[in-house]
Length: 107
Image (cartoon, rainbow, N blue to C red; front, side, top):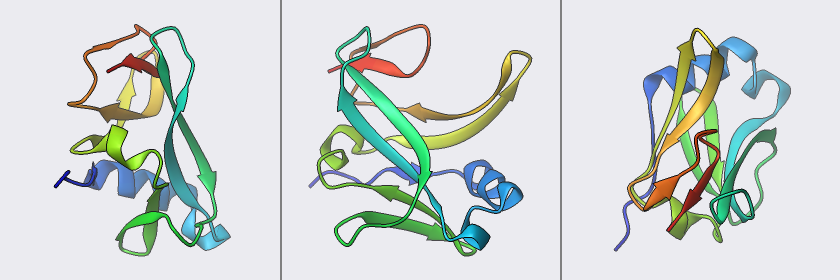
């Protein structure tokens, strides 16, 4: 069986800072076809659907739809702050290669 994605404490802390749950939203992480490497991540604030995997901590939630779940098996969803900016990132063990932008990957 595939392991579900994991969400770091930093990612949950950032969701809390932006008040996602207070507004009734959660972080949605999805995989779509496209991008320069074949697949791309879509990361946005959204509301939960009935068949979503919901990963929750301290009232904050991360959502993954059933279609994206196999592509994100064992992935780590994190939040990073660097000189070039701050963003949610995904460390995906299923990706065989990724684009320099960090939002596109191949399997």
